[in-house]
Image (cartoon, rainbow, N blue to C red; front, side):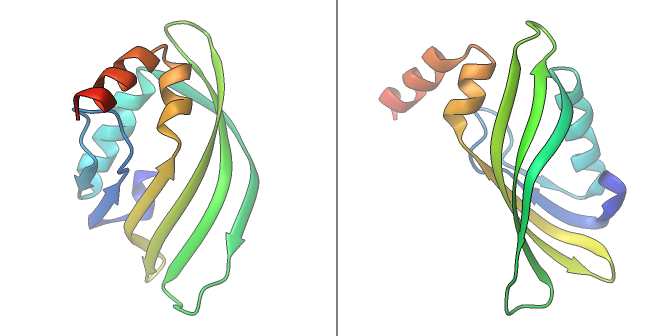
Length: 121
């Protein structure tokens, strides 16, 4: 998937857990992000894909459900996702993905940590 990004693309996931980088600058950083994620989870399917029309020809907005399982526990998950992406010359120059942080916390048995981060803020 990283090959779909320009070498200087910016990938953002603002709702990642505290301490995780919310922005990955460049294709290589995004590739490393994917490799680290692959140590924790395996994605198995994508469904309910909807691509929404925009007035900007370079902007794509899509929502979808991403299915997978946590490798450490075998727990299955389905995350609702919304992606904004800028496309130029067939490659992604910028992408921002939103998902529900509570879904991730539940899947990875980290809800208490999320609650602690919220109450400490």
